[in-house]
Length: 100
Image (cartoon, rainbow, N blue to C red):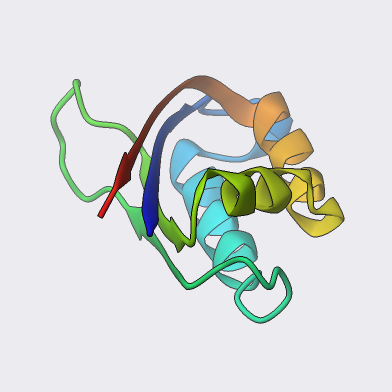
């Protein structure tokens, strides 16, 4: 199994929404992929509550079978829609993938 973790910082005010609103949008839309993208074994999106200036706004924890399944997830049309939106509203992103 492969765990895929992504953290985002969003642009406050992008598309007229706050960073918090962008984080909540990501949570709603990514978690809705469960059952839509067959490669997803587990998915969770956390929205930051920390006031630290170093904190990211949201984090995705995703479990898939292997690197090939992760690639199919990335290319799935429903994930691509979310990814495109995210590109418009994020200021930074960091990723870690590891086998569990």
